[in-house]
Length: 205
Image 1: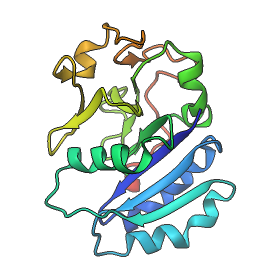
Image 2 (image 1 turned 90 degrees about the vertical axis):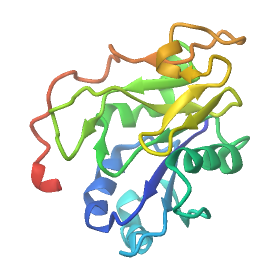
Image 3 (image 1 turned 45 degrees about the vertical axis):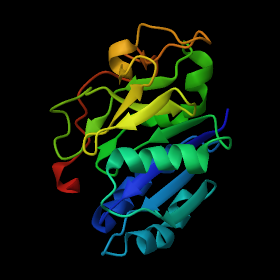
Image 4 (image 1 turned 135 degrees about the vertical axis):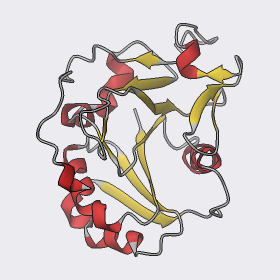
């Protein structure tokens, strides 16, 4: 199972060290891609300076070859369809302002193999500007690279089922032709502790 981890950045330099330290536990079978979206604070250079923190991981840091006028949906679709397609099986999208359970990151490549087959997976996350306030705040983050799923909406981008013309979260109980769920909502993921985290400090932000 080949999984790419995709991180879009725009002026994230002050937050990158703690974010990158959070990724140290990430399953080493996964490849990490940092995409700089025309930052003016040397975000890309900061990633390269901090790369040794992720020793043992495969890291790629590149400028995103799209204009800032492109919406987030277009950027995610470009990354999935033009760069990752036919190279990886799944892509995990994670933003610098969110955090996942460390066990979930550690066993990331096992999710599509152990859980019910799905084109997308939604799981709990922490929104770091307000840690604990919205948890578990389920969001679709793990996507199977296929033709049936596309991102829509320029802001608060959402993965849609092309066949049903609606968000995958609203068609999660339906199956596609290959007997994949459109979305597996991991409400009872066995290695995620469903409790409010107290070890996340607001001074992160």
